[in-house]
Length: 459
Image 1 (cartoon, rainbow, N blue to C red):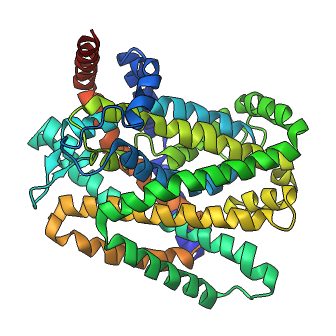
Image 2 (image 1 turned 180 degrees about the vertical axis):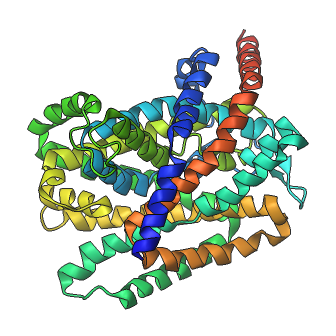
């Protein structure tokens, strides 16, 4: 196990080198400037699209704008917000949150471009059904010579869609919050029982396909976000005097890597903190990774720009709001300095500290719903990738790999699972961002035409 942990750690470090940072952040800034910050200027319009003002039941696609966003959010709002933020703070201190914000702001333009492309260049699978996502916009937009990038994305996408972090942290939460305090000895057997229950749950839902996934996600995501919001606001209310201090600390510590732990080469250097923030930001909102365009590519619309604007809201909800609330809950309670806990266990400590007796149980409900909804969305992403590689009629084979990974994740360490997903996400980002940067001028052209049409219709 130690060898596996070390191998995955090396893999993650290698994948998340300077070239990827330049591609994700530099590429995102290029897209922002190229579009003259237009996506931000039409933020209110994005909200109107999300609310269904422009919906047309006759438009091509499978699901509504709202369901596309909630399906995408059900995979991003979850362990990235609870375990990912806790990991960032335990490794890099409060300053890591600032760099997560930066990655989210840049990520808004990336999400806009990738999801607009997912509608502009939808392709047909072997069943003749319309599909969207990086593999399709690479093939349809860049042509046959670039198909190798689409294949690479699909291979890495199948691995990146495995729910290993969600399952691992759900297991950790059940162990820390329910089993251990009630005197149950945690062992391989208890972990396997948890895995077994999750396998049954997941099998029932994923066999129902996207319609069932999006129906469940659109009901679960808003309610779980509201519950989580309320709980964190209670924590901040209890510790309201500490909030301004820690908000200021996020800014001041962003340029001083006082807390950074781990990598000796980077130790104490700003570069490590920036990298950590961007890495956790990517895990939180998946901007530039390529998963969200697969959900947005299924939206019922013939206006690519509309879907791009809806997708752009993802990092706002996910990182700028939900992650910030989690970070403040961990910081104001002081648990980040008083405990060696990591991941979901650290967030649970904050809830327990602020709401003794019931806080951690309420968090357990959120964690359970977050994890379960993420399980459903990721299964959809993985089958889409396999469908592209070996044909839609054989995509169900992915479910066997998916279910096997649930068992693996429940019996493996958190560090190993997060390193694995970090590394694979990095490899998914390369084909996604390369194709997006090349195709970006076409999106800008589409963007201008869309707003000209909108203007004409209102006159």
